[in-house]
Length: 389
Image (cartoon, rainbow, N blue to C red; front, side):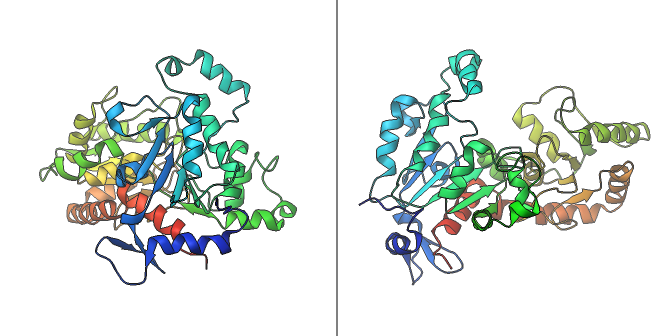
């Protein structure tokens, strides 16, 4: 019998939980606050995100919005495969469903235009399948739902509001400190008003929201954790590689300060154009400081990559609620975005190289413990499968 978690969470959830938890610690368990989740028993269905298939490859059926090789074990998220996805969502032994947001309604004109004229669509990247797939979660399913939203924007799209209602937890990367702002110009026409915020149903939905980080990029995780040699003899003071024009004004303002520091004799490494991944990591490792300003969103792979390379990321002050945050002066460095503060932060940091070494060491340990794809996947599983309090 299919369990309707959105309508009967308390009664049905315990039955599923008993299949995947133990009171005594098994050898391959992972402890949450209340229960020990036995990962060996999990059966996971993943839609459009990489976390579960990368961490639990033998236990995850993964539908991805890209062409796949037959030997990969993954399924292309095409319209033709939606029937198979629907059947998987109703499988009685399913433990957990993890999905990314759809971002666009399947019937939107913009999606049709992308399907017809986007170059990637003609290269085999499906458009309608990824948009339709999350909407299958409107129907009864056999397991609790977790949403992983790593998009750049600090709100939940109108097309994805139903997911907030249906899920057990909604993990949001760009999570504003005032959670109500997730509804700005989506569930509400402007900034949510006091009257809007008093609506009990919406307050309940906000209780489901949790922060999540981008962490280390999955394709480079093994290389970053084992293949990058931390440089003991740093050859540059500050390194930055990334887009500037057409992105955040924080980057444009900071580039002016870096240019002034270079004129004063500081060793500033800002290459032109995009670097190959291994060269990017090599130059990160050679720098005392990696400047990591926000782009379209505040969170950035570079925050974590710099530490994995043995350098210290210097970021503008965060504008979001973070998961396992990098603490100022312990795991990373921060500066205020007003003019002159970036320069002051760099000068102050470079005056104490022993402190920079300690921050790089402790920050790298923190990233490897909490901000790899496996660590993030376990965080999602742990939170979602823990019984309601």
